[in-house]
Length: 463
Image (cartoon, rainbow, N blue to C red; front, side, top):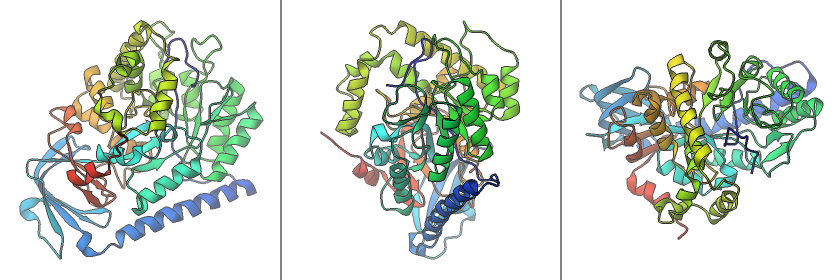
C-alpha cells in the first residue's frame, strides 16, 4: 500500500492534460502529433455519435431541470436529445415534437448533469466497476493511477463508442514515485529521471501527470517544470518530510509551481501545523483546486467496523480480485480508530473553510481502496453537506466543477443546449436533500437512454 503519513491517511493524486502550445523541440512536436491523433480518434467517436439515426432521438418531458450554474430548478421542462447532444431545453408548453423522437415522461423527476467521481483507481476496482458506476449515475471519472494507461484509455474509447457501458475516463497512467513502488507506480531517481518520465508519459498521450508524496524537492520541481513546458497538468500529493510530519514542498510552493490540484486536502495544514496566511490567497490567485476525498478518510477511520458488515448488498457487485485487494490492505490499518477519526474531523472542518474562502472543490472518493465503493461520490457530497456546504454547492463539486477543472464546461457539466448528453434523472430533488442523488431513476450516457431496468441489468453480480 502507498505510504501513509502520521497525520494523513490517504493515497493517490491526479490532474488533467490541457491543450495548448508546446515547446519547439522535435521530441515535443512528436508528443503533440501523438496527442492530435488521440484527439482525432475521440472526435471521430463524437461525430459517429452525432450521426445517429433520427429515431434514436428522444425528449424528456415535464421534468424539473436542476440548473447547477444558476442554482435554480426549472419546473416542467422538455429536454430534447439528438445523437449525443442536448439540442433543446425549453418549457414543456413551448416544446414542439419533431420526427420520430420518443417521449420519456419526467413528471415529478429531477434532471441533473451526469456525476463525476474525480478520484478513482480503476486498476484496483477492475473493469467490472465501469457499468456499476453508470448504474449509480456516475458518467465520468478521473482515474488517479493504474498500471496500464493503454488499458484505461481503451476502456474509455470503448465506452464512448458504445462498445461497452462505462463512464468517460481521464487518466495519468502510472504514478511517479521515489519510494518502493506498487504496481500502479513508476520509480524516478532524481530530477533528470523525473523529466524523462514526464516526457515518456506525455509521448504515450496520458491526460495528466500524477505524483506521490515520496518525491524530494529537486525532483518535484523538475517534474513540475517539465509538465509546465509540455503544457500537461500536474496534480497529486505534496512531498512529505522524512519524519512524516509536514511537507518538503509547501502548499504555496506547489501552487506557484503549477500543481493544479491537491489530493486529499494535502498541502492544507492541520490545526497543529504552522498556518501561513498567504496560502489561501495563493491558491485563489493560481486557480488551485482541492479534492478532499472525505469518503476515504471516513472509510479509514471505520475500516474494521465496515469490514465486519459482510451483509452489505454492494459487496456482491465487486469483482473477486477487488475484494481480495481490500482484504490484503486491511491488515495495514491500525486497530485503533482514534487518530483516523480525528483526521477525518479536521479534514471535514477544512472543507467548510476552503469553501467559505472560495477555493474550488472537487468530489472524489479514492474508489479502489478498502470500503470505498463505486458510486460513493454521492457519499462524498453528503459528507460535504454534513461539513456545512449547501446541497447546491455539494452537487456542483460532482457536476459543473469537474467540467470546469477539465476545461470542458463549454461541452458538459450542466443541462444546456449544445452540451453532451450525460444526464441523470432522479426521483427526488437534490437541492432539497443531497441524499436524493442516490435515487437514480434513469441515466443518459453519451446520448444513450438507460432506464432503471436497463441499469439494473448491467450491474455485475459475483454471488
